[in-house]
Image (cartoon, rainbow, N blue to C red):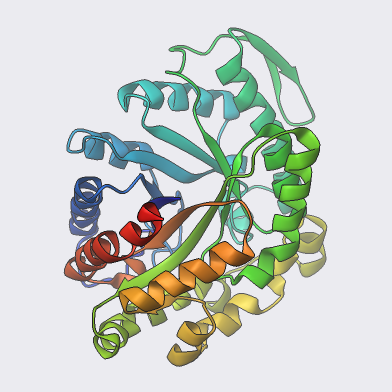
Length: 352
């Protein structure tokens, strides 16, 4: 099993954004030293409590110079808002500049983005699927053309050519995302905050389609995590950050941000965002977050058991990604959580 770090780079005020970026860079260097396999950051705009991570390439470029072996994964580039041929060129360049340590997450993005980015919500699925086809062709073929509903591309030659094969990951809540991943041999990431039961159907579909298409499942399980040798200390130190993590994820929905009408969202496969689930999570009592497996907070033994429970339920689980700086956690908390997890949890699974 692999272990990685995932960050939304939430910004809750109280510090300059430049300082927050510097702290994340320190955390990446620390994770590399501890032997984590990958550091993933989201790409998102417009909602500071959710994320101020607007350009993964820039952050990865700075981190590469300070690290030796850790991979860098964009989780992910929000596809309907990039020109796919242009992004494929940037990805190819990143694979070279990052010496083969770049991994690409390609996602459709959250349902509140279309109205902010000026894209009709009904177009996002078509833009996403066509973009995936274009990116794969651009990275695979020396020259390619494409004629679709949203893009018409004539005889493109992406330069420079990528260094090796760039691993691709997708994530989300719609069935079609998991089908696409299985068809193409891509990994899938399970969104944070959701228990296994919430995506059990989609993961079953993914495994079924992988078997049908002869591809291997690669499932990344993301969970916010805080750890201490003492249970009460862990719970006390993590409470504010975990509360704000859930509130940050729901912030675009609870702050009255405009979204497309419910019927349009449902037709586009974004019905989840009108379900009220995120708003309920934002109001969840702290003890329920922990007991309900929404976040992991506790001793090394408790965290090990949580992961064992997921591994037992989720066939094909390949990687566990922990979020150690959620909801405005202090830099020392993120560093502590990374180190204790690496020293006390990872050896249990790598030894096994």
